[in-house]
Each structure stands twice: as C-alpha cells, then as structure tokens.
Length: 158
Image 1 (cartoon, rainbow, N blue to C red):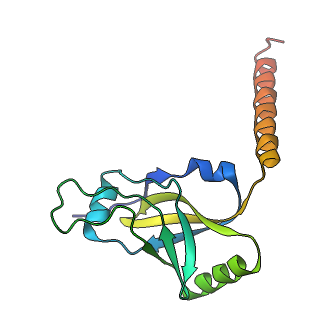
Image 2 (image 1 turned 90 degrees about the vertical axis):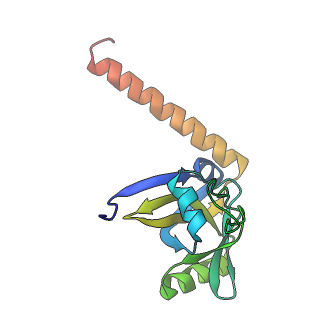
Image 3 (image 1 turned 180 degrees about the horizontal axis):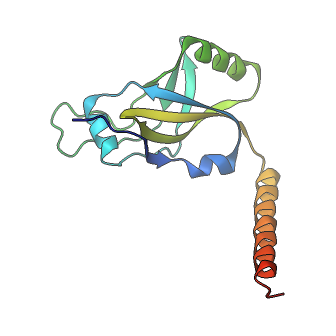
C-alpha cells in the first residue's frame, strides 16, 4: 500500500493564537502508542489546555487529550498521558535555553499527519495581556471593514 502524501490536520488550537503572541514555530514528532495513532487517524484529539515543558533535558507534551480507541482492548492508552516530543538535539537545546531565559512557553498549535507521520506544530509563545487581545480584535475588525469598502468601491457601489 502506498504511503500517504501531504498534510492532514487532525486538531488545531485556535485559542492559542488568541491568548499568546507566537514568536516562532517548530514541527515535532510525538512518541505514540498504536491505539493513539489509530484514534488520531479517526480525527479525534483535543489541544485545549495542552502545553509543552522541559523535563530531564527532553521536551514533553502535557494535557493533550486523545480519546481511547473504540476498537481497542486492554492495550488502550490513557487519554491524557504525557507524550515525548521528538526533535533534533540542537532544536531541543535552543528551545530549552529560550524557555529558561525569559517568560516564554511552548504551546501546541496543531496536530496533523505529514506523509503518514503524526506531527505536532509547537509555538514558542509569550502570553498576551487583556488589552493586547482587545487591540488585535479591533485591528481585525478595522481590516475587515477596509476590505469591505475596497470591495464595494471596486464594484462601483460607492
């Protein structure tokens, strides 16, 4: 059977981009069990309240919910278990250094299959304050209004 090609998104964390200013993104593999992969292929996962942290010189993903596989038996996994992130040593060391030096955190942005391999996109993020969120919403509304006006003008309605 030929291997899958392309990128199939399983879950995305839309709230992360609202709550955090994403400074940089990385693609990481995950150490998963067989039933976790089957559950992901069925399109079932949640990144709400998930985060990544350093422990013992490695990066781990906490709080990601992958429901038990429905056809699984006693070999089923625990839904919210800690999962190891698979990155190059250079990337891990660089991320750990950035996490230690300032108030940054690692937030998972999406889980997807890339050419058949389960991947997670993690973002190096800085928390936003309430006024930052309001400014972003106001800017988005203003941009939307500008685009509407330009569209009407281009159609000769104004």
